[in-house]
Figure 1 (cartoon, helix red, strand yellow):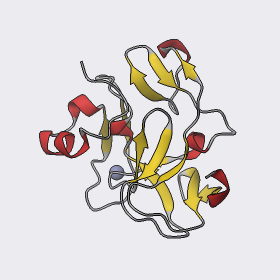
Figure 2: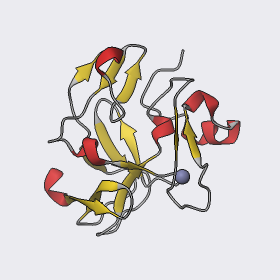
Figure 3: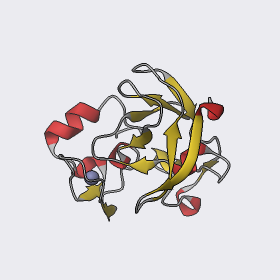
Length: 145
Ligand SMILES: [Zn+2]
């Protein structure tokens, strides 16, 4: 639930979402946001649900502040939740792999997550190496055509 999380500054990454308690793997954490918009109204904080269907968090939603990591501890859960990908401890930042949330072939952004497996440039799910696609295939937010 929302009260179990804190939005605060992260070094070099603007704001981030931090847990204040422990969560089990697969436990639901919070709602990403509930507003659905078209591609035209989507922005860099939006999550893709379909070809022209995006979930657009407002600044009052925790989804607005969740940062990317190439080694994420959370995942999207339909229809609009974030769930734990592995056990989470109090004080840990909640992170998602943005490649599981966007499937626009032209999209990319640099990554400075600092994880050992950092891909340096985050790209669309369809551009991920096959082994990473396989790992993520059950947690992507959008429907593959
Ligand atoms: Zn990275």
